[in-house]
Length: 227
Ligand code: CTP
Ligand code: CA
Image 1: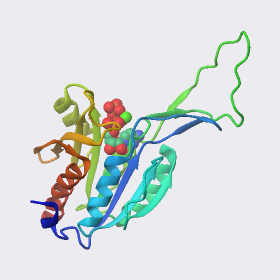
Image 2 (image 1 turned 45 degrees about the horizontal axis):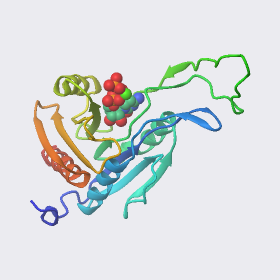
Image 3 (image 1 turned 60 degrees about the vertical axis):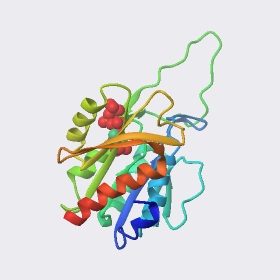
Image 4 (image 1 turned 90 degrees about the horizontal axis):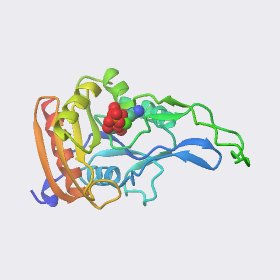
């Protein structure tokens, strides 16, 4: 199907998309972050709007123009993201967690800029674990038909790690990107396999992030229609 033929198959559906990467503050000027640009999540939001969905986009440190037609909320850290997702997911027919969430955050945020001191080495940064937002959502599904989608980037044993992660997170679909070789982070194009809790595996060829987004919505739309 060409994109124009998709019509409004998500009309009347509410979807929640997270995009970007969390920043965990160390002090007022420093953070622990990751390389997610937010492009894939923004492509998911834009394609969902094009297919007729009512889209809420939670944007996490993304330097891109707002996708037209989406309701955009901005947060910075994993804890803030969890709060925003928790506030929004109840009314969503589908939730797509495309944001890269830091697994750990500094146990303490220094109130002033941390200074280096002559002759004294740096203090270690103690980390604590962040909440697993996706696993929490699938545990507390708003309704049994809600379709919950996770994203994962893996460097090796992609299918094996993907299957294990899908089971661990309890999501309906897991979009697994192979990283390395110029793929995924900060690039225009993406390649992935989408694993389903029903045992399915759908290959998505190397191509623009909008195409990958449309293939993900195809799988979501199938499940919404079946639910
Ligand atoms: N995720 C989340 N909350 C976290 C970590 C991850 O909601 N604290 C979500 C991400 O948005 C993504 C999915 O879980 O949709 C998979 O993230 P990933 O980092 O691959 O999973 P982890 O369980 O953290 O596994 P790993 O040890 O490989 O980082
Ligand atoms: Ca992780």
